[in-house]
Length: 264
Length: 311
Image: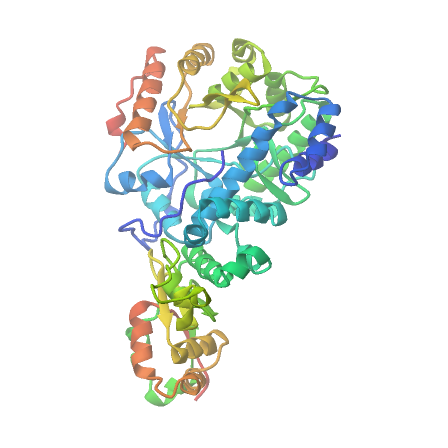
């Protein structure tokens, strides 16, 4: 019956179950010695999708290790939809749960989150960004009550690791001449970083955000007012400069053109 | 074959928000040679007007909410009739079709108004998992009923008729009681869809399963054929024995050109598409293959077509 045949194909390809191939052959599949072509097509094509979405992770672990990671991920998280631009959203969570990877390269899951954010931003819905003209004519006393929406392509990632430095790296940072094995990788000593990803037009920006800036944007993402978000920025960083921050985000296209305002 | 093209972050200048998205007419696909549009060649199409009568894309690559891919397709679509070729609908799935996927396809087609929409006589989805390949069906009455029911669901959801493509395959099933050409033709007759005749797939499957490709060509109901595909395949070994693998990664082999001639001689001029998906060469290589297909069409006494006039 067709449902059984298709379930057996799944077990024999994604599931890598050689008993399932034998059962298919026993059930009348001819030229079963070629079955591996299908398994190969599926794994190679999906690994290619992951490699395109996570190029830095691939660079840092190397092609051979990435192939192992991809193989395990595909078996554990096969695609649930045929839109492969959306395949890989679980890769960071998979890496976090894969002990051999995180023991050696503990920053990998967060780096994968940044790469996935870039992928999502690339394919996300287009929208107009906010510019100063949209705010012209607004009485200054109403500024604090504004609710600035983030552009739909914006993603915010906070990490205990210097993921902004690592993103786009061709290879792992090599230990300096004076660093011992305890200090590897050396960049880790520089502490965590916060990343803003956005695609106002055709190009994806990956920007390092300060503590204050990140707290400010996170508050806006939670639909806080501009006044509340500015307070969150100052709470995170006493030197937070609201007007410089706003000017930067208006120029960079971080905000959606649709703005609402509390009464007042 | 499915999407394997890498993702480039920048594609240079792309027009945004021109508001012409609703303005496409459903241009018919001419009985002339076209090529598959892949990301690698976006620049050639954005910076010039390559001489191809029409283009075909994989629908699944454009089901995203927004971004440069859609903007690029919109810019290129203004200058060429478009065909949308699906690789993910899984028309042969026993569990039926993914209605969310159908809805996304419908909005893509409403936006870009392709002259042709096609899919495969194969399956990819089972138990909700999408196995990213065009997997073979047993040619049984049960599978035929499934396929016909699913094509009907797809055509209803899309509000248009589709073409179904004969697959290339590496295994067959003892329970298959219907020759492949009859299975495809019967599915088309019962569901009211058309056929996309892939002559490379015929050659690959005929070699792999030991039948005569000419038998397939001779049996095809020409009036149901809406499009022909040509592509390259790999002549290789698997498990120490010879096999042809349909990898769309090279120029068209001579035996496939001969089959194209045989098919055109039997069924008359049709749109012919040159597909290439793996290790894409410079665009000129694809255009050269398309020119050879156009010459085959022209030899039929079809109206000679000056490709430069397309733009």
